[in-house]
Length: 117
Image (spheres, helix red, strand yellow):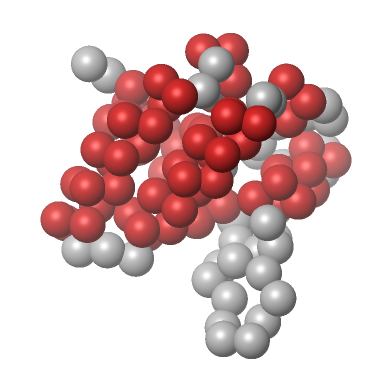
């Protein structure tokens, strides 16, 4: 993964070094033209457990991006199950990471599907 923070990353080819979600988020936070709500220091509130949950959630966003309807349904269910592992005050970061695997416009479409009861 990796790519232009304004458009979101694209899946990397075999043998291509990939950008981590943490690095991508910091790049977005530093870019004044980024549509991201992340700002400098946003990741500072994350605990080790939050970070591990986000690692898994980012993998779920990637699964969603590359899957058929069944895979997408499973990915959304997994994100729903993982969000409670994060501090309530940091869960919004999971929404900001949707464009790491998809596009910026997907935030508004997907976030309600994992947060509505």
